[in-house]
Image (cartoon, rainbow, N blue to C red; front, side):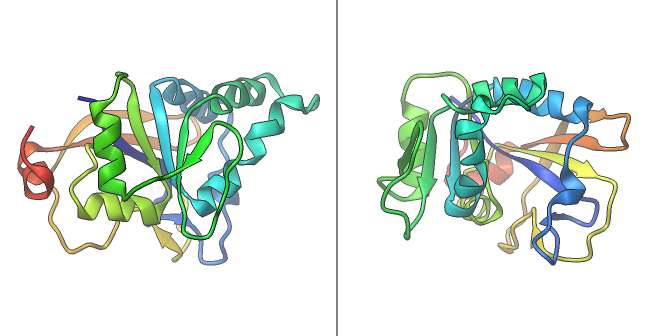
Length: 197
């Protein structure tokens, strides 16, 4: 069964966006960007909310920009054809290889798990991830920790008041001091949300 993963950049104090809405602290260097490029190859479909969808729209046409470096062109070439499902109550249409979700998050994930494919079902955005976490739908948390304290903002981890036991399954430290931590949700935690697998 395909894994549902939640992976984003996060400050050391646990935020994906600073209190001023800024993301400049999470801009990747070449080594970290290469890591993200390699990671997106493992994804079959990306689920996201409206804000992340609108942020990532840049990459739908970025491949036409002659000033982009090779890594950015490679990312654009991988991102553009990747199927995306957008959860929004305000959008009536989406562009590129995206579609609006036709049901709730649990229903959509259930449909994707039952369908063909072996790659990950990735979730992006704190609001959508919080909903998935509260329902016990996330299989892995992949945290890319940047060596900065931003002092507040949008938290990476949802505050849903439910204990989740995790198993560390991978780490990587980059030259810039960024650290990737990969945690799998253990069977006991998953059982409390959707039944043991």
